Length: 116
Length: 112
Image 1 (cartoon, chains in turn red, purple):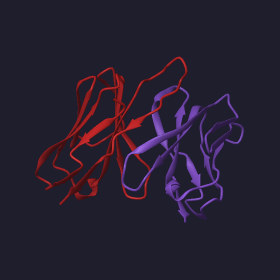
Image 2 (image 1 turned 120 degrees about the vertical axis):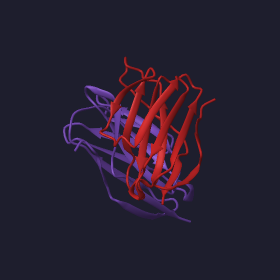
Image 3 (image 1 turned 60 degrees about the vertical axis):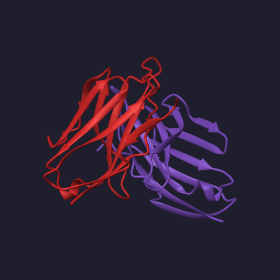
Image 4 (image 1 turned 45 degrees about the horizontal axis):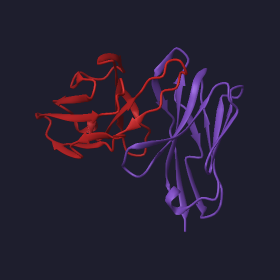
């Protein structure tokens, strides 16, 4: 299995809703990522989990709450979002090869979020 | 900002022509990668070049890296309509290899 699976593909939510985005990989990768991508812009890093521990938080607002229940799963909990949070949310994973310094990411297809 | 800058922002060519995209960055890197993104979908890794390498090939792709100029180029030879996509460089910085920062991207259109 060489895929990263993201669900749902599309999500529409109101500003008072609570929803979650889910990500799963079975490649044995020990690092998992959330990126946010607005239209015609590059992906922006939000969070990194290494060995199931949060290692990077790029000053993301607390209305986004990541969770890594185990080495295969990554969630992004959403609460009280704003319309400007509408974007494509990309999950990725990598098998960090520290000895070579290479960190190649495998991305999911993304979850397109619309906040009304 | 550590972010790479791609050049050009958009490129339109005919099938069979070569496409060259450039990327510049600001700080010392461990390696530089190129990714491709079809419209509204996830990114796909194309090629990685390490800081001690100057050139790398993979199929129709050729990547160069000039660390003295902090720049890289991606050449796609004999382009096909299926190469139409956005291409991003991504850099992994010394002391921060978990963190991969993407450049602004080049939108390539290959016309049949």
